[in-house]
Length: 331
Image (cartoon, rainbow, N blue to C red):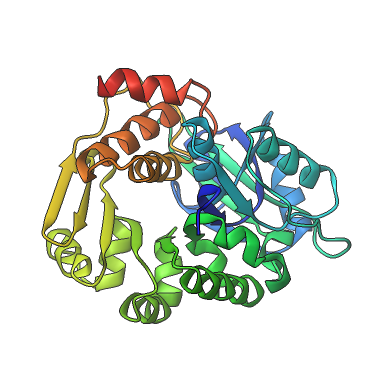
């Protein structure tokens, strides 16, 4: 069966609210700089928002950012994620649909409002995220329709969604549909706290052959393999997967597929402005490369180019012409 989309992603439908802050503000709020913490009530989210400086609203969510990057690279995509029937939900739907992405998940009527991530950006470009998941964690199984899953060559899953029972069940349903249709399944581990909470479940998926491509960073790979030796952790984890991609921040990234191995340096940038979404855009570039039939090294380079563009400005979505940028840099 032919496919209509290169990638269909399932992830948190979130609107990011980004504001500048100094290190003292981060300390005063009891946050760990550069980390992500959950906010469990809309009232607490409103209280933090009231303390923040002037903000910029940008549709976000890890997998949604990846899909936005893929769309900017010219790859046809779909997205499944839950918003509420409120203003932020309308913002999210408009933004992703305006990119040409198929997004038809019905808005939640009643219940929690649309998810938002309050992101504080310090002068060194580090982002400290405070996420209220709201409606995003209540993605029902009914939102995962077979027609959309079967239309995607790759199903891309956001690890953050594994934290909530309802969205986890929806993702399991999607994996079953993708497998039945002969599609590939990719998973991004998202964060070390996700790994720490669901390591065994992720290994069950991996060892059952349900994951074709795993995206992770240094910390996540070490948490999966329970070692501080990143080299051995990558080697051992890669043996259990068809494809493993591990990002190393400023030290670049590597990919393993059987006996094939590739590593690239990070692309240089004039200044790191905001690291929000860097990993998401890296995944977009790599997935685009794979969809175009590129080898591992070229796909890694495409990911590095997209990540560099992302960290050169505020916000998790590309503002430059990614398709032209990648073409120019690849030569």
